[in-house]
Length: 333
Image (cartoon, rainbow, N blue to C red):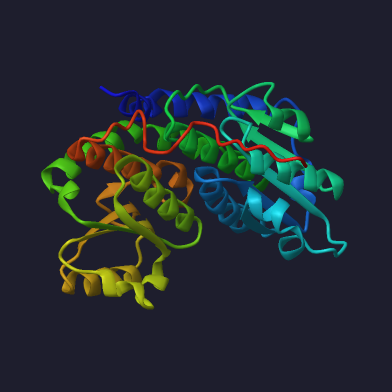
C-alpha cells in the first residue's frame, strides 16, 4: 500500500481526532472573535488550500450571513490594489497552509498586518512561519507525509466548519454521526471505481455549487496532481454554458452537493450525450456524505479516484511530477 492510500484510509481515525481536538479548542478561549465581528472575511490559501478556502468561505457565508471572499495568496500580495479595497469596513482574514510555509500565504499575511486586518492561521505545523505572523492560530494534530494533500484537506475543512458552527449554533453533535460514515465512504468509493471501471474514461469533469464548488475544484486538482488526467471543474450550472460541448461517452462527470431536481435534469442531459454521472453528497447519491455539514467528507471520492487512475497508468503517486510538498520561492518582501 502506498503512503498516499494509507493516509486516505487514515481519515477513519484522524478526522474523529480532529473533531475531538476542536471540541477542546473552543473551550480554550483563544478564539478568533474578530472573524465573526467583521463585515468581510478573506479566506486565503494556495493550491488545495485555496480550494479549501472556497468551500469554507461559502459555508461561512451560509452559516453566519457575513460576506466572505476566497482568494489565492498571490492575489493579495502581487495584485493587492485589485483585490483589497481602501474602504473602512471591518475586515478579517483566514490564512490556510498545511505546512505553514507557503510563500504567497505568508506574503498575504504581511499585507494584512500592514493594513491592520486581524488574521487566523490554520495549519498542521506548530512553530511554523504562519503561526508566528497571525493573531490567532489553529494547529491541527495531524501528520501528513505525502506531497499530495488528502487527509489534511479534509481535516482543515472540518476544523473550519466546526469553528463556524460553534459561533453560529454551538452544536457539534451531528458531526459524531458524520465521522462514522468515513469507512463506508472509503470502501464504497474503491468498490465503485473498480466495478464501474471509472479509471477507463478519458476526461473527468467535477461540478459543484456553493460550498461544493471548492470540492469540485479540489477534485480536479487531485486528478491532475496524481494521475496527470485531462480534467476540469466548474460551478455546476456554468457547465451548461459552453463547456458541455466536451461531454461524450468518454467523459466521467462527478456532481457534488445536495442533489436537486435541477441537477438531475442536467445529469439527464449529459447522459444523453453519453457521459457517465456520479453523485457525491445527499439526495439519493452514489456516495452519501451527509449533506452540507458533511462537506469535509466530499473530497474522499476524488482522492481515491485520483489514486486509482494513477495506479492504472503506472504513475508514482509518492513522487508526482514537478511537485514538492512545500511551495516556496525567494521574494524580497
